[in-house]
Length: 79
Image (cartoon, rainbow, N blue to C red; front, top):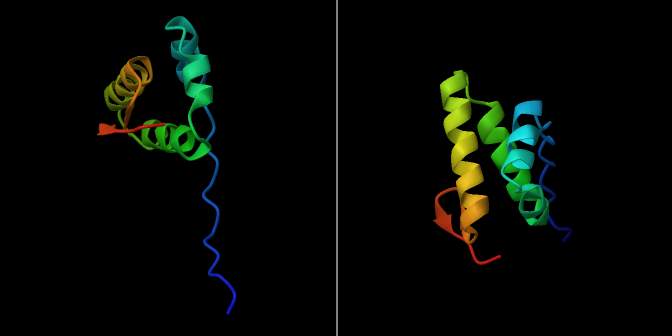
């Protein structure tokens, strides 16, 4: 029996304001070191927010988690 294949998730585009925020806080290398699914999840979470203040809040949480290390979407992560 062949394995069940799951459809690939759409790759999210990084908005300029996210790229600029990563650069401003010196976190681009930490972002790039995360697994692809985490990078994509963070961008999806930011991109799907409808309100600008929600996008900014999500962005700040991502930046704080990257800076702290060992946290992913509010959960302990050991990567």
